[in-house]
Image (tube, rainbow, N blue to C red; front, side, top):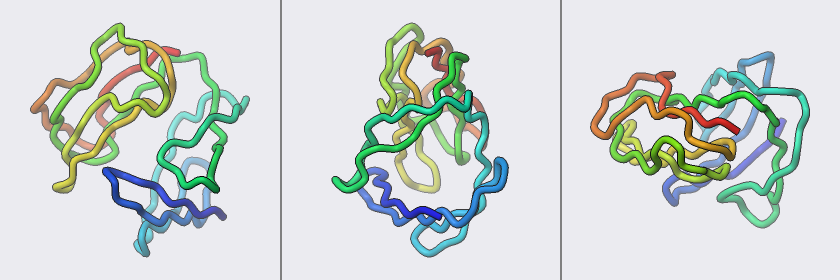
Length: 139
């Protein structure tokens, strides 16, 4: 369907989206097949925005527009190393908001929408499970 190169902590990963059916996507990451659940796309209205950490040939991506708060959840179990924002802070889409250790790697969790930090659900040194809410952002 589509291929991307994503950069996480300075390391490039080849991602090949094999299929998307409803909320289930099958992707290949550096040769390993992974099934991921895609939740809450928001409204069907779409806008273009700059892509972060991308190669010059991949300039834009389509992202959903929503007026309701967005809850960012842990994609993997891990430990919260640092909370980079506080409630009431204004954030931009793509801005790092939390640093988390998962699978022995330090991961920057980014805001997927711009807005105001409404609620922070975790503190530094908290251990979190997959799909646990980390932060809520109001557009």
